[in-house]
Image 1: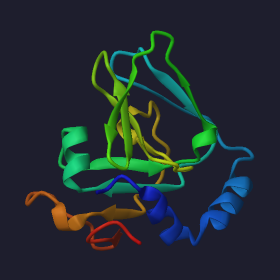
Image 2: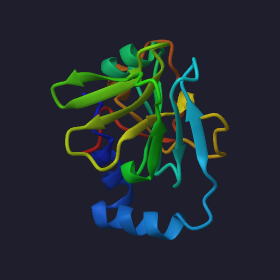
Image 3: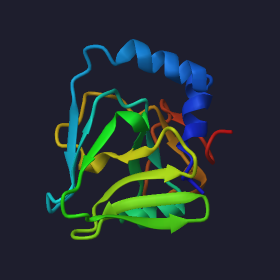
Length: 161
């Protein structure tokens, strides 16, 4: 369902090569983003920007996050360093990829489609969130009735193709 935001990134930016070019231009001088799970057993550092910040309203993301939508960001996977000394990072395997979370406290950390270069970081785990606007809402067709969607933000009934 909502697991492959790589398609959304390419739809917004243009192509994999456009994402790579944007990444090369923006990694110089980027402040490190740091994050952690609720219990602190897993920490991470991201050395590049959030490429595509979005709210996903699909049933799968809502169930995984435990909220009305999941706020995620597509990132460059090779720029994410995870520190997990007690091996708490656990993968919940799905048909098209996996969702990674802390087995100690249950905090979602990231999701990745099989073979994907751009995993989705679960933004609730960021310690000091950057000042960035949401790029889009995905799967608005599955949103909860009480969720209000900003009409000035790009909105997709499903994930962009």
